[in-house]
Length: 123
Image (tube, rainbow, N blue to C red):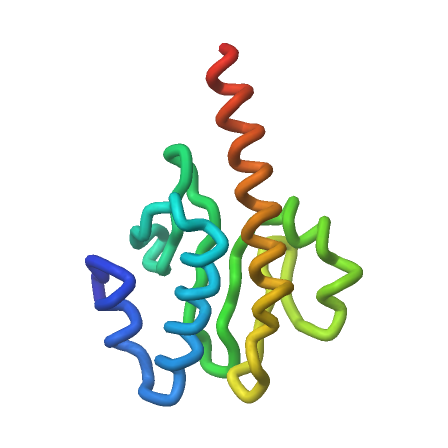
């Protein structure tokens, strides 16, 4: 299914996952109020400075947060309680989302995004 917005993405998900997805969306929106909501790689995405800032997605047992490998690496010591990969972290549906951690990760992504934007502007 091709999604046209984060609303249509969340609406397509299982009922028991919608609340967590909407919470994730609100956490990111609050941390990155200037970011634009889009769908990229078939996932809800927040864009800033014409670059993807962070994606999130519903999975069978977790919400995946995809802030990029640099942010994952920066927060490695704080995310050992969660599964993940080089560029993602997995938050199980049966546990409350760690709002402070997610906020800090998004803000770190904003900082990285702005640094890249500044480098591009110098060229």
